[in-house]
Length: 323
Ligand SMILES: [Mn+2]
Image (cartoon, rainbow, N blue to C red; front, top):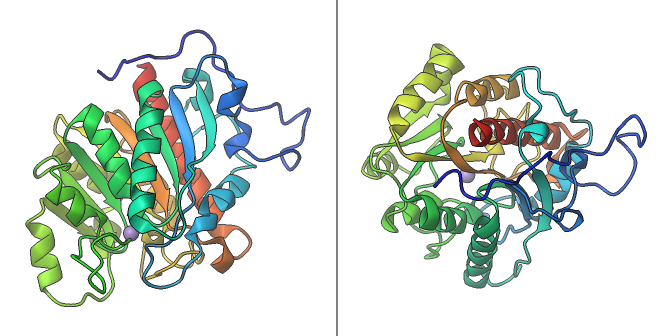
């Protein structure tokens, strides 16, 4: 199933930055080709989901895809930390942004779902640039249709398993409870990483435990280290297909000020990149990076961190797909 429709021959990589400097030209993620420039389709589809009608505090994640693409312009094609050139291993392309209704949340969820479904029909792997965390529910629905129950590795300062806000079931704080109710999550295989900050009450934790997640708090991650936590996560994923969902607010606000609901006391971008790399080899079928809100950013700190995280996720998927 994972080997479906790999694209043949040599992939077309980023444009040559020694001919066109990296600050020039219309931005795609990491200067990769647009999907409409390829005759073959692609193995890993990068797509934006510019949507933020599900947020509870600061808005602006609708500009996340633009911000992450802008923050990705300096990326180079060889990743020395993984020791691979991800864009040589498989065909990666920027598929632009999904068309999403900014007012009608239910309509938006359907549009994100059908957009992901269409991409997955021809590209076996998705790298989605959010958008607020609401988008992960329809993405998981589309991925589950092809890959079955998913071991979700959820990086976030929040649990995002609350029930409703102001009576609304679909928000950026509820996607993983809805995913559990939909039967999308592999039992006892999912993880929250980086959790911290105040909750509404202790019920938040007991509810969450019943959905089959294991919590690694930001403090535990700090105490045990990225490699040890990665081992724990890997063991938990068992034989399920893996989906990585990363809310940029998992990073300490010092490393990611440009986000909607920041919480003090989080890991550094280096900690999270090391943890991601330590997940290499897992059968990761889809990834998202959400909650980048460029209006609150400074000097592209958040967008650059998000683009490096997405680059690493692409590397993990490319390596797995080509091995
Ligand atoms: Mn979140």
